[in-house]
Length: 394
Image (cartoon, rainbow, N blue to C red; front, side, top):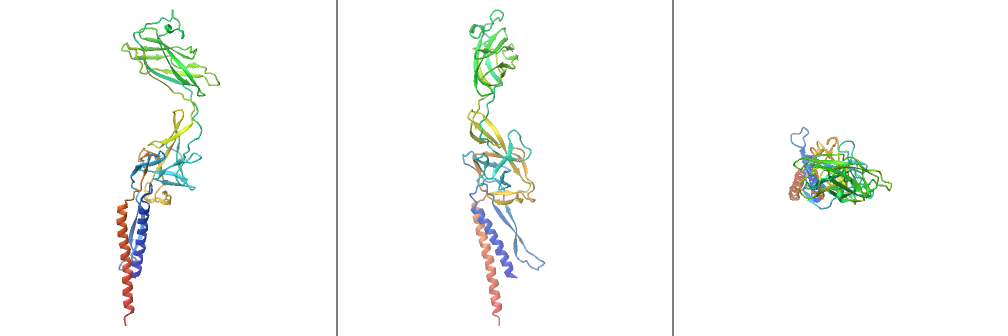
């Protein structure tokens, strides 16, 4: 019976050596999680033990160290969660976020697994889909509003509209003018000029013109006695016809933060919400998992959001190779969510999670496992000597 005990010890020790050797071999593998062997003794109603057996090989899902790579498509999870991939016709989960963009636009790992997430502007919910970076250009967006903040000189003269009609060619018919660029539905630029005329102590007339075309609509700004803006009326839907096949332009004006002080006319800011079409020039991923496309027209657009998965019992996941795991009944179903929300960690771009294997600790374990193997070998040798002695009895 001593032989079987020693053989069980040798088998268990060999498994332990295999696990430790695998940990050491993957000490530099991105996203790798080390494992350890659990043993249990064997009794079968015997007076003494029948040896040992491997009861489980458990993986350690503690976080590895985040290491900066400065490569934008390298991702790491700081905290809880797994990336979800569709790989080899199955769904797998990994902590390795080393990605590239395939020739058909999908975000993939080195094995060709396609990263999944939610389409743009959907948020969490529904079934995750394979994330794809569209190759097409970002279409033009027509301007719909102009937001200006300025100071109108409280010392300028009041102009009586009954005696001085507005004429953009006559600077004495208005108090101040400034211009900016807007875009039509085809992405063409147009120069729009705003004309301000002081028509009362605290009242200003606002007109808008595109080139030589003056909008028929007139707006009014009213200021408080302390020079702050009291109201802005008649500023909606200044309408122009840009021509060239573009749709009619309708512009709303906003003057939040504008003042009437006794200083010179001054334009503090002038913004509008339109832009021309643009080609994709790059992709970045933020710490919430948003895949953001940057375009040649200096615009950015969220193309999708990476989904993270969590498990009630991650130790129940089964390894499928290529640094990935698949869910099992023991792990429970994957819980989906977005980075930074609830129990999920954030996503760090330009970094990877190194292996959580402590090489020094594993080398010490290797020495102990080797001694354990040698001890079980010595048991077999001793049993052999005892058996040989029994055979030699006369």
